[in-house]
Amino acid sequence: MKAPEPVQVVKERRDRTLQSLIDGVPYIQFLGIRFDRRGDELTAILPYDDKLIGNPMLPALHGGVTAAFLETAAIIELSWAMIWEDMESGGNVDLAPRRLPKTIDFTIDYLRSGLPRDAYARARVNRSGRRYASVHVEAWQDNRARMFAQATAHFLMPAREG
Image (cartoon, rainbow, N blue to C red; front, side, top):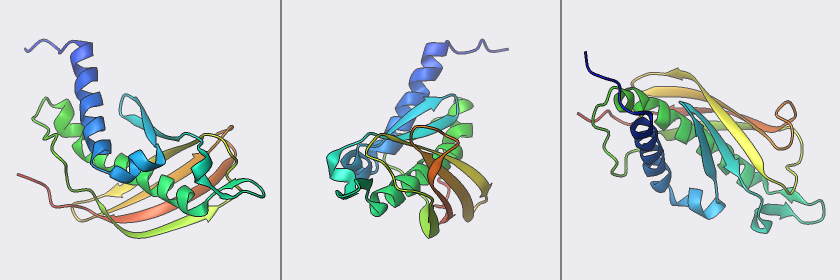
């Protein structure tokens, strides 16, 4: 029986793999989105920036920024779930830019105005097959129980390599 890998090696492999996913989407850097990883669970973080405000009279986050944040959280979560098994089995995960799922449709519910502060989102994969996936995303700011937006998205899955 093979000895388990040191925890630091596992952590570094997971962090490196997640970073390669994020680096493949330039819009993530433009919006400033970060991801907090705890095991296989990801939380997307949208740090507040003045450029994200759509209505300065309120002020409120721009609806397009909110939608992009939720869609990004869904795509990264779905991609992360797709590569998790290969990564954890010690298999070779290609860190080159990868093909991401393509959005088929995206339905967002704006529940309240996004305030001028950091926002968080978590996505849950409801169904994932060879060709199609369904993901639900929830976004909140100060209190996870008080969502300001939620979305359901359907994706066309990229062909598996190998």
